[in-house]
Length: 266
Image (cartoon, rainbow, N blue to C red; front, top):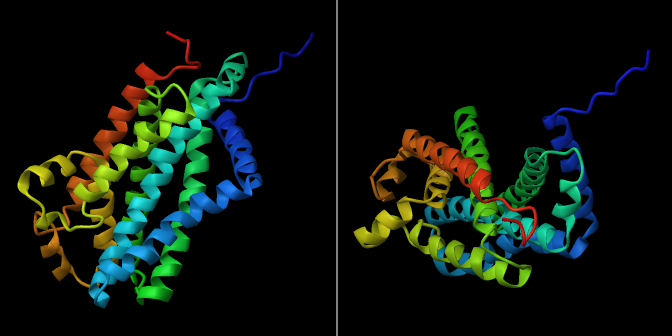
């Protein structure tokens, strides 16, 4: 009796695809250096303007770590999917037994690893240049962990969904970078939300970037007194989890309805 070989499960295929994505990412040295180091360079340049005292350094570093992670997950992943669609990678993968869920698991593995490298580099730069103190309690590191995970997943899904609008890598940069740049100003990265007009605060509060940065500021704050600098006067950790969780669900729905294997797919 001939044994029938069983295919690996969706998650196993996703991890295998993730390993392939990581190998390709680390082989492209220029892309690796640019992706991981750009947020750190921006931190150094902008920090000379915005950081005037240690307290500013703590909050600015936390916001830049959040913005850097979102850049990798939202912009970087979105452009990667557009590139895979444009060069035919997605079309070839469609002819294999691998489901599109496994493809996305692989992409998110790549984003998690690259975002972690990026966060470590940003923290190192912040410590050396701005004398930033790292969180000193397990509770704060736990908060960092769940904000990191929810931020990466939700923004990765949104980036993939928005990538369906771009027909090529040439116009993908505009489609993905424009909202990201605008949201940095509305989300408390460069300007505290409490200093913005109410209409802009409301607009920024709709999207994940504001909540990721606020979550990280709660982690890096030297004490809870810094919470008064936030628009609501508190860290709102429960609301952060709720908003990021809602965007994760919304992202899953959007991806399931908008994902295309090729630019000619219906």
